[in-house]
Image (cartoon, rainbow, N blue to C red; front, top):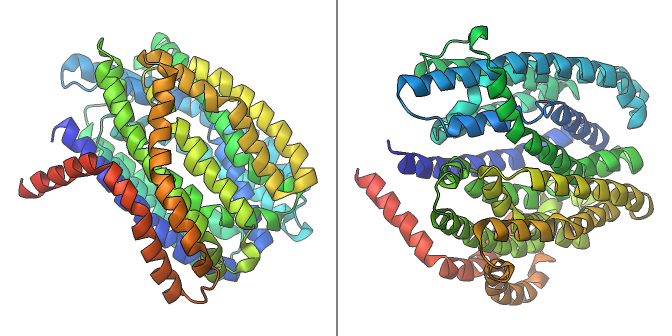
Length: 506
């Protein structure tokens, strides 16, 4: 299978698997909430956010490994030797990093209960859970040495299939343990089983496709490690900043407002977050290809792919914005109950953040990272994180959930929202004006029509009382909203249709 076809199939499978996972998650969440309460659910979100932070203690090595593997894909003995050096070098370092994670997590665990005002009857469990999950994250570091090669070498269907199986398994295991009454521990037991399952699957397929690779300490290359870190470390800084900007909101809410407020924030944000992740996967699946294009002396192919991705993702996000602003209130009410809805103003703001402001810069950031331009992005990301943290903490104390959201949006507007377009224009040697116009064009094109449809339909969504009415009104509304999207991307959609026809005929 050639690389283009592999990437195309990988992109399609990624979207299909993500949609299925989203649907299963939506179905199971009310069951989990019914057997727990809002405080326990909010606490579980915070605990796994802490372990996410611990999982970032690779200092950017994962990004460096994937980029170097993406640039080393030949079948010659020399290329195979380079691949073995990359994986052996990363394996040694991952082992040390995993140990560091366990130590840091164990030191931090005793303070979690007091910091988040955890109920007394859960304080001991929370401390133990953080230690257990720290050990689990440390062990997962070792798997990164082998799992990243599937994505880097554009075996994206395999990579996506493994991720899908593990995600579904995690949901199923969690529901099972919640049903048995293990409460907070349900999420932990599910993670342990998924890790074991992940280990077996990853090692099986790694041996199947890369059986020639042997882990040898003798293949450790300090110069190679420095090169991988020189690229990956800046992405690590960006990753830390991203976590502070977009995920620390829950931590701030849990420590300043309440654990129940974390649940309200997370559940009301569910649709815009899921929609953005689904749309961003279109871009993310193109990362290995952008790495290859960036190595060419001619920049026009890079620019063409960038613009195509930008056109599609921005128009998709704009349509999704209007759909989610209309359907979220009745959806949350029918799904988990109106007590978990943060309000229509919150929906407008969170949808704008994920589907307009973040998508506005997501494509360009990915392309710049693929080209190895991460240092400048990391410096601006640090500034954004600092501003965001200060504003969010201050506004959370005075305005609650909305204050945290205002802090996040304001920090982005002051930093990356203008800097990423500037940096992208400079790299691709185009004017900032033409870059901005390419972004605003799909937003304005879709919004003129979609905004009118929203105004006409919003009254219907306030009268929905059951799922049949919700599906009927949402279906009609979404079909109308998608008209400008389909028209604007008709050439690209036709190309995709032709590729599907050729694939089915092959």
